[in-house]
Length: 230
Image (cartoon, rainbow, N blue to C red; front, side, top):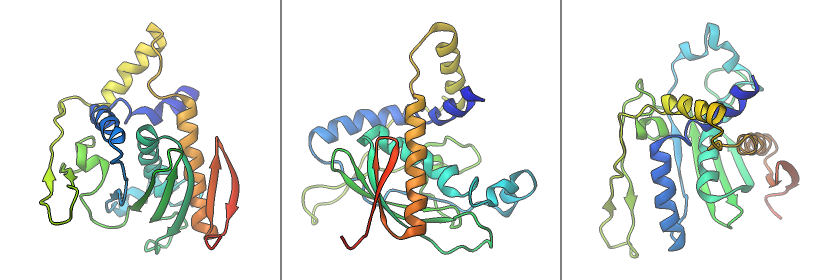
């Protein structure tokens, strides 16, 4: 169970898309152009997703879109921009009549002083999610565009397409990497600490949703809650 729990967080690290994003991010960060405003992860899950063997997903402690889906997006953002040090979040309206959260809006602050926002929902139809954008999940239609703004608002936006090998299956790459780590002693792409860090941020998001306060994070600990009006 230890290997599964730690390794499950790394499937997006092994993605060729993520590696391309890291390269693009390195160039952009050097030019001071990184600003993760309004990333979105949104789609509508079917009712069967929460039935029978999926009934645990209704639970407010073990289920919910924060721990099931947002955790991977936070892991990706921390991979690109460094550790998240503060979150503020508001939970969206629940429509399913269960305890688990369905989404919300967040403000994130990173250790490099980058500030960004994030919208999250598993209850609305949308093409804006990692799976649809990369083709990682074959059951979700693929669509991918990048808009890159110029320096002035009257300049036409450019669209850049990042070329990746779509024949590579991320979960197959994950298993290959696991074999390399266990048998060949290769350094893991995603450490257990990185996975734990994403879990801590998820917990901070949930605390912020319930308390209505900004939640600060130091290392792997939630160390301070401060009023939004301070």
